[in-house]
Structure formats: C-alpha cells, structure tokens
Length: 317
Picture (cartoon, rainbow, N blue to C red):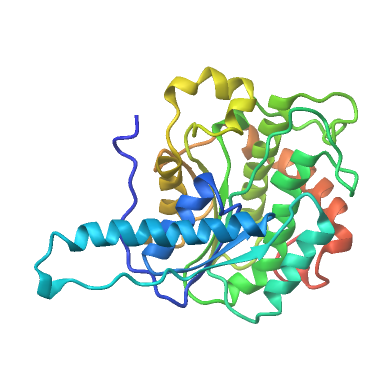
C-alpha cells in the first residue's frame, strides 16, 4: 500500500519559512522534520510548548543519527558534520479564537515572510464539547480557527515571493461528511465520526471556495489525505478501527503533506486534492458552488469580529 509513497528530495532555501500546526507529533512532526532536513525554516505551532520543545530536540537527535549513519559510508576525507535544524516553536490553541488571534498577531509582529502554511493539527471528539466561544470543539479547532489563520496570513503569503502555498491535512473521511447548516454547530445531534468527517469536508469545501475567490492566484491552496495513519486519535473513530489493519506510520502519512508542500512540480497548481502522494478528484459534493457559498457565508459570520478590515483586498467576498 505504501510502496509508492515518496516526495522529491529538494534543496530548500534557509530563508523559506514553513508553519506547521500541530507539528509536535504524528504527521506534523515528520512533515516538519523532513522540511527542516531539506533546509527550510520551520515553525511548530502547538498548544503544548513543553511537548513542542521535546519534539524539536528529538528531531535534531534523529536527524544527527541518520546523518552520521550515511556519513559513515563515505571516505573519511568527505565526511561532514550534521547541521542544526532550523526549527522553532510558537504557541497556538485552536480551540480558542482569542488564543488563535494571539498566535496570529505574534507572528505578524515578526515582520517576516511566510512561504508555506501547513494546516495539519486536528482532533477527534468522543463527546460533544463546546469551546469558550460557543462552538463545538472539533468544528472550531479543525476548521474555523485554521480558516481564520489562512485569511489573516493570505496577505503575508502573497507578499512573500515566489511559490507560496497553503496545505490542509484533510482526510478521505470527508466522504462521510455532510453540510447541514441547521446542525453545523451540532444544535440538534452529535456523533464522533460525523463531527470529524464534517470538519474535514469543510476544509475541502473552503479550499474550492478560496480557489475561486482569492484574487491573487499566486498563492495555491491544496488539501491532502495522508492515508489511514495509526494514532490514538484515529482509533477513536469507527472507521479508524475498521481500517486499522491498513494503517501506516506517521512518516508514511507525512509523505503526501511534504509532497504537496515542497514538490516543484506543483508550483502554481491550486485546488488540488492529494491522496497517497497522487492527485485525485474529490467527489462532486464539495465542488457544489451553492454549498461552498453557504458554508463560507456561515464561516465569515462566525469569524467577522476577528477578520482584518482589509480582507476584501485579498478575497473577493
């Protein structure tokens, strides 16, 4: 199943900046590590700073071990010392709009470019829980807060030079999702599988909407299905347990994200859905324009007080 999972080895300029939400574990961890290994500057945007620091140290240790093993096969005169990976951390709690805005403003205050935003973090809720903002936690953390970051960072991405990208870690679980605007915040009913599937569906619907409405097409936006990666999170939901025999490890799951974020082949290619390192077509459901408009109308109403006043300069609303 995973024999064709690969991404091209590219040399990434050290001033090229990548943000990976949820980069301290799983798919995000391996995505961040490999991008840093290829030379990129990576920021782990995580809720738990202690776990983020541990992840950074582990990335360096693993990289040095792998590097030295390769160097040992070379003549002694050709051997080099391993570099220090350019990875740092920033605090981000996606279950709070206030804390998400704090992350956004702290990054903006750096006045530095951003070339690739990888919206990777995700959660699965066993029971219905509401955030301090009044939204179901999975809806807010997986979809709404990531959309808020995207809308704020679009101007930065557009001004950061050549080949800037947004990559969303979605899932084939979107096929189990449905947009019911009357139950979008689970006012009527809640299910663990439906909550997760719906949030992944909304990511793809928003991708298609953004590809139509972002005025500057130089910033591309794609969604990826990393495969069924065996984590504690995926074992929470029914289809995670059903497909447990076919699950892959975090590194294999990260290959599709890395490919979408770094492969020069896809420079300028937007609105793509990657699955198992290949381009696939989604179902017609998220492509429906009326459905896209319905979701985004709701999303902009929710996020209105947190959106920059100049958002209309970048998005045709």
